[in-house]
Image (tube, rainbow, N blue to C red; front, side, top):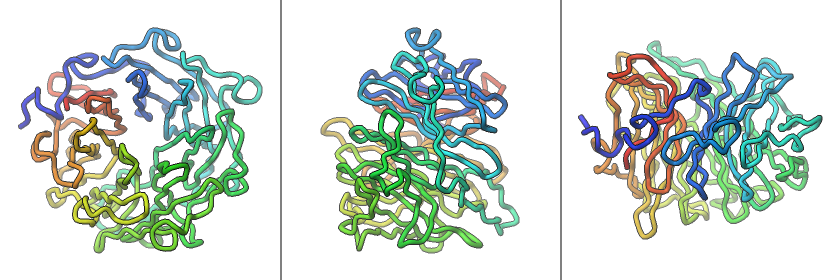
Length: 425
């Protein structure tokens, strides 16, 4: 059992003994750390209300009273069954962009962008008719994401395998973000960038075959994207990584003829998130493995900006996290942290169930070469006292302390609750 003041345990200096909660925070949406101020943006968009809530915290976990109304900003929307938030990012002017999927019917989704001023006021000049948001008419609004039926009779599918990747990036005056299995390019005023694939949209594909988008990351003015083959009876044991230029064309100078094939033989593979290293010299791809089975797990692969597997990470091979047989450890988030002249660290948050379906709050920290960081938790795995629920979205502060949006239950607080927690580094 980890000591309560050990890395990976709650940081008592944050909010209320390591946990922030609020009655307006009632759904686990994307979170982000504003690099310039280290303030924390957290979001909530529950199913039962046509409303989006954004809260900004100071670095110590207190509400920023200069944001919105005493730290909270709210935006109502109309015309949709629900908005599924997928990402949050901030431009150089500190304007806040929330990205999501605007659900207008069964399997019908359109890209959604909401813009706030730096002080949390909804930017009513962004959309039409004084709305602070825009909805884009997807060329193909249906999601091609089938969820294969699991063949394992003990399957306990959580639905995480069908989640959209949660990433957005601003490059110059262009915002790139994922919406279901498309990459969308708009300028910071919200107008589609028609230069990008002649439409402003790029639908996930590999070698002209449709696929599932599993993350994107910037790379010297271009975009790296991960695409999985469309499943039939089951997911495949491989995924593809490619690089797009500013026109939305596949860069054939990347990897072999434009595509890097990553495989985990004997294990199905679904990309979830993609992150660049601090230097931009290499990238880390986070994947789920053995999707929808009792052994659902986590894999990582590292590759260079040229599209070659990184030999400094797990000897150039994908890494599958070791866990007990029958336990589920499905990935929910990836973070990369590095101090100047220090080794890079990889953080993972997991949806973890043991063989008796007890949920645990678990995070993992790895060294840059893929080995477990033994200074974190036990053999690189940190567990809050529990069973303690679900670790979801994550973000890193500059000092390496990990912020996690979570549904947890602790021994001293028997009720389940939605929190943002900070863990010691």
